[in-house]
Image (cartoon, rainbow, N blue to C red):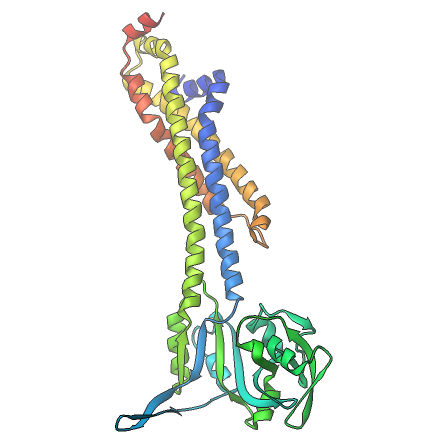
Length: 383
């Protein structure tokens, strides 16, 4: 009978001891795999949600600001634009090398015009792009769907005393109020929102664009490269990344990852301590058995191998079962953490099994060395 079979029979003979020894590894690996899987799935969900939540690149006309004055008298300033943006520039933006990373390119046009006799700022964007560009807007009434309709910001709706189904007159044209925005705390509360073609017609500047909002998919976030490519495609435009959005995405994902690693490390440390204490107690209880084995010719290396094989079998079974339970728990719990589509991720499971094996073997090193140091005379004293 070789050492491997002898170790296996010892485990079968001491089932309760084997179960207790592997309990720490089982709990530790199960927790590690569950948290790692949830963290990876939550990272993906956070990226997807943040990528759908607004733009992270702004394209505006390049302009120079000149101060005007005479002597010590300041007369304000003037802004000289080098070029204007048009609807045709959208095609240039979508032609860059990283075009597959662009989720949306939305043109905006702003102009001042009257609204039923009141001065107001009109904001135009493609009606079909509103859900993409402003997914957080909540509307009382119906969404903007076609030309000839407007959405009113909360403050301008109160100023005009208009609601869904009402009408707003501007530039000799009557617009139907499709809905009223819930207060957002932003500038759109004071704006009239319409299809960009309607606002361009009011300003008598067809195809003109005030700025583009570009939403880049932020996995690995090559935002600076995208900014450079858009700048090359539109030399007359100033392209800038909204760094606050990009950095907040990275920070949110990193926080999820650090939390999962911290909790897993604590649980694994407790599991390793349980292995050490259990195997050390096992050596204490088996003093007579180890001494007898030494007396019949087992060398110290054989004793160490025996304990390593016993711990190895326990670690393998515990780590595999813990990984399976962790994957199952993550699959069940993922909808509770905002993961719409749960996936089976094998990388955390394989990593957990390896860590469980290493943890179990390392925890058995001090007890194994103590067992190898036992002499046959100690077995006689134990009788």
